[in-house]
Image (cartoon, rainbow, N blue to C red):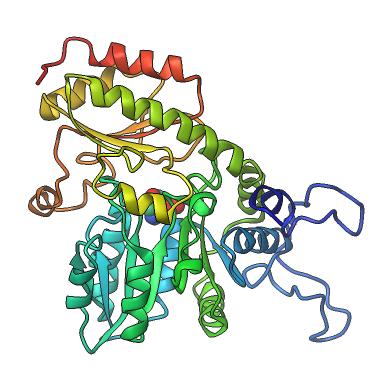
Length: 383
Ligand SMILES: *Cc1c(COP(=O)(O)O)cnc(C)c1O
């Protein structure tokens, strides 16, 4: 099945009991057993639930994975992956990852004896150089957040295989519509389904996909043991969202390309980060590795923090809010919002400055979106 078909049909056959075309929301904690230990594959809803299972099957199909697990949030999914590791293990992490991932690794898992090296994962040599005898995993995001740098998954998979490490890729920004890391040699794919997969900013969730059976069984054990599962209703909402992922991603990209072009010519803007721009430093890699360039655009204003504040206050259609990937356009100020938990010195080292804004370009009419930016930029200091 092709992507758009799987999104609508994988794991979503009509209900055998009633013929309902849409999977029921199985709001049940427990299941009848015909005799002790004899059940239909479901015994308790933390362990397994039919609505959640539909979502897991669908997401696995979209990533070309043999196995999929759904979690209560993206960070719960990331946390489950860290549960694969133990005291003394070391992870090489891209330095431009989601702020919550940084917080989870640096503030939580270091207390349990994991250690992390933060490197520019866009440079495979830097990743290789950071590997130690106790390294067990490489963890990256691509495109990265908020700078939209590209990480070469195939190159890192080869480094991971040489050193017998797992390569985990957070594929939230690209979505399975634009990129399938497992097909490039990654061992684990992580999603915050809160973003493009859910797509309507109405549900929080996460997922982990893999082809490795042992890894899956281990994750499944932790999903059940730790218990950060989504409710059947959350799973159902996410499934409803994912059906239109292909359509939405096409429109997000069309709009984002036009927003990026508009920003490039605006004198109040110093820098535009969008992988679809020919001048983007990783444009060639984006072309090879992705089937499109996505809906995220980051830019920096000439006027710095003050200008970013004004634009944030004035923009109407671009709602000033955390998160991304919904049908509505959002604007985020990384320094005070998503990346607020990263110490200033590290933020500046990574090039995340006060004048930077990150747009999640929605699927509204492009003329309205450009007009909104235009009025927000009015009178700002120019280069
Ligand atoms: C939002 C996000 C997460 C965390 O997901 P939640 O659903 O908010 O817990 C992880 N990675 C990336 C890239 C994200 O954008």
